[in-house]
Image (cartoon, rainbow, N blue to C red; front, side, top):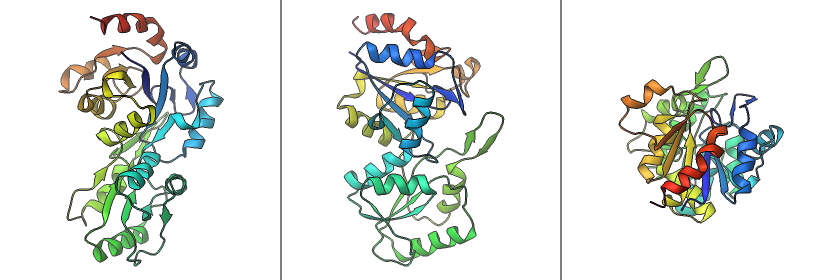
Length: 269
């Protein structure tokens, strides 16, 4: 039986700064039926608090503990799973804010031997100096945990696309002697953390997303029922050409109230 919906944000709840039509009402309906909700995003360039304010400004009912970004998930993973306390961050304010929120110490000196992990995400101020500092850190410690928030090579905006976290992390990969840990979708890690937040198993949640290669692939890997929406970057013609497929395709999150009863009936069969 399903008890919770995991929603991607951009392309599902809104496009850029524009809320998608009737989505807020759909979320209200879902919550009124007793379902839990978690809002998931690979985008680490805003804090969970900023996402909360954005959702509420669009009329979407949300609480801070329902929002999980790849940066906040990275902080949880570093603290609870890797047992790290001192980290070096290649990223902006929002990454550091989320890491500090988990009680992690941000070390600024790349020569500091007490650093336990190098964390990297999309950084709008990334430059040669930051790349050099990361190399300095990597060359001093072979036991360093290397953690990337997400692998997205691009970020879609309302009228264009910009380089994503992958453009930063791929420049660091050339220095690595081991595979980095990826936290964001399509990695299982962010979904495992989301499941722990709601204390549910994979067969008790539904994931709703607009990207086949991140949202749907992550759901497939975890055995989570997935719904693909057409309000983001995917068109219906894309679906047959991928090995990973959604369980259900709908036009928009706003259609979920219409399919909810049949969905619940089908899982009883």
